[in-house]
Length: 391
Image 1: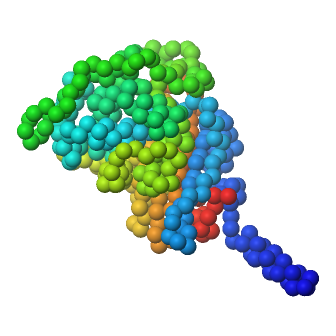
Image 2 (image 1 turned 60 degrees about the horizontal axis):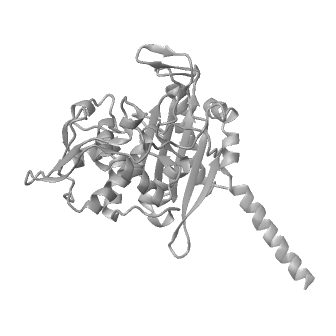
Image 3 (image 1 turned 120 degrees about the vertical axis):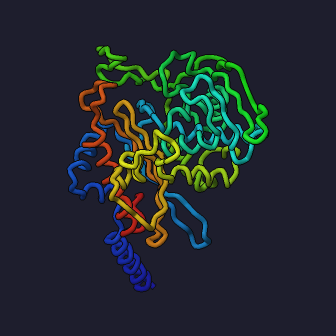
C-alpha cells in the first residue's frame, strides 16, 4: 500500500514539475524582458505612479466564463487624474438616465441643445459616438450637462463605485460652476417637439474626492503665467483603477462585475463596445477628418502604441485611453479566439519628468506610450504561450 501511495506521489510531483516548466507568471515574464522602457518603469514604479490591473478570462468545462486577476502597486489613496476615462462612467450613466426618463428616441436621433457649449446643437447619437470613439470633450460636457452632476454621482454611489467622482467638465471654471448642470433642451428630430429640458440645476452641496494627496508637480502654467507651486486636483475628477476596470468588464460580461449593474440593455452595452472599437476618424466632422492624425490606432496605447502600421487582423479589441497633465492611462479588452487569449488590462502612469504642468513637455512619446505598447505585447504573447500568467 505504501508503495502504491509512493508511486502516486511521484506521479503528482512529476506533473507539477512539468507544469512549472511550461507555466510562467506575469512577474517572471516582466523580469526577463530586456526592453529598456520596461526596465526603466518597473525600476521606478513609485516615481511613475504605476498601477496595473489584469483580468484573464477563461472558460470552464461547462462553458462558463471566469476571471483571474493580477494587480501591481494598487495604491488606492494616491491621486491619479483620470482625464478621458471619465467618459466610460458617463456613457453608462447617460444610457441609464435616458432609459429612466422614457421620453427619448431609442436611436438617440434627438437633438441636444446646449447654449453653454461650443457645439450648440448636435444629436445625442453623434455626441455619444464622438465622446467614446474620438474622445470628444465637447460631447462629454454636453452629456454631463444633460444628465447632471447630482444624478451622475448619486447613481455611481448606488452602484457601489465609491471611488469615482465626476465633478468637473473639460473647461475652465470654478467649483460651483462645474458641479452645476447648465440649462439644456432635447428636441425630437422627427416632430421638433421638446422631449426634455431643465434649467440650471445645482448640486446639494459641493462634492470632493477623499484623496488627500492631490497636489501634483512643483509648478504649473495658468494661462501664460507660471505658478510656482503644485497644482491642486482637490475638486477635479477621480476614477479609481478598480472602478474603471470593473466598468469595462461589465460592458462585455455584466455577470463578472463586482458592482450593481447599470440599468441598460444588452444592445446598449454592445453599442458602447462598438463605439470604443471604432476609428476616431469621422469624415463628416471637420475636426476629426484628418487621416494623418486620426488613424485607426490613434487612441490605442496598449499593444498598438498609436502605431499606424501595427495590425492584428484576428483579434477583437476595444479600449478607452486618457492623456492629460502628464497622466496617462489605458483600459483595454483583447480577444483572440484562434489562440484562446482573452483579457482586460488597465494601466495608470504619470510621465512628467520636469514636474511642471501645462507646459506641454511630457514624456508620453518617449516613456508612457512605448511602455504600454510593450507591456501589452508581453501580456498578449505570454498568455498565448502559457494560456495563463495571472499568478
